[in-house]
Image (cartoon, rainbow, N blue to C red):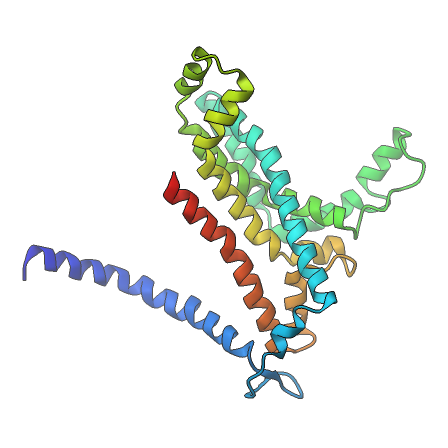
Length: 281
């Protein structure tokens, strides 16, 4: 056997465990969900092996379109807010000395040391009528009566932004930290002001971090169900809650599968955009 064939064989042997893992735990479950989405609901749950398109037709009813639209809106809002907050924060961290840089990165990562569910419940203490926010505002005489903050889209957005902000900061930091700042000096020497330098030089050369961070925030935000369930209640249902209810409460597995496939398609769109941006840059 030649050296080249031996190398190819070794590579195939190395890829075999990962390929089997993906086939069994990713591709096969997706295919099962896709198959179930074309079946009918059984009388007592489960599925009946009768193929139909009714599950996908139900997706376009007004109620479910409203839930999907709310999910997309909150996901876009979360992504935009995380980008607006995370970009300056990542820039600040990346331009510090190594000692301060490591300390600030540690502060960004520290929330991951606590369970996400616990951190979400902590926002109830902050946002409820007798919580920290309303108490502080009343103490400062800014408001006379407690604000209705909890179980609103505002509370869900705050929880999502807080939960997924580190996912935006870390890719941005990685992209900015590798940036060649001598290009900024060159742009100034050529007559560009700070705003033009930011728009024409800095943002394009850190676009990979922007796109990667946006995907890492948007993908989990659009399918979130813990945060809207705890902070939004029944008033702010997102598509993740809807899927959970279809499988666990309504026991309508086919319709839950159709919702899952729709969510998969929605998630694939930004991933494809990322691959396109990566190819171009």
